[in-house]
Image (cartoon, one colour):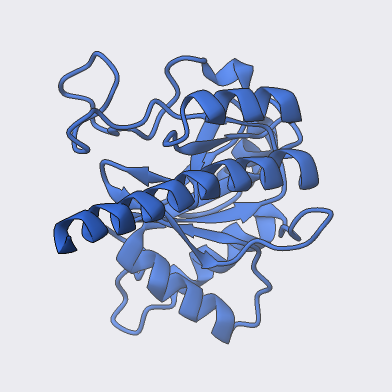
Length: 220
């Protein structure tokens, strides 16, 4: 009897977890107008990627079928996708009017957020994975990003930029790297407030170059 109850508890938890995936996708698409699509997800063993590549370096955390260009805010499409694949990670298609992001290693991310808070920089939502943290920013073009980075004497090599043609895995997805969560929550009925990319990059560079030992707080 105890074993049966244990299985039922796990089933209820699993069902609620699946409902959370659909709920997150609907919030992004219908309330915030963020285009999303389902990620490929994990294999049956819960470890490897469900895609055909046995050496996939981002297991579960990338588009496959549908492809990235299929990202949408259409409620009917969102419901159809996650009804058929309730475990699928939620992927945000970045750029082209949708939020973009700047990511950095998790340890550097924690240090950076503390430094930016101390500097009084207003931040938007922050997505955390076990290996990297991503700061969401307002949409920017690659041309503008190129001009911004060109004007800097130095930019930490640990920074990665997610803009048009890119994607970001959103909570509460689970991938081969582990659980995705909000380090700084996203909220707001009309969509979360997002900082300008220039303000965030400037602050990250300043936080990095001002390390007391002359090293980089944002390095790997």
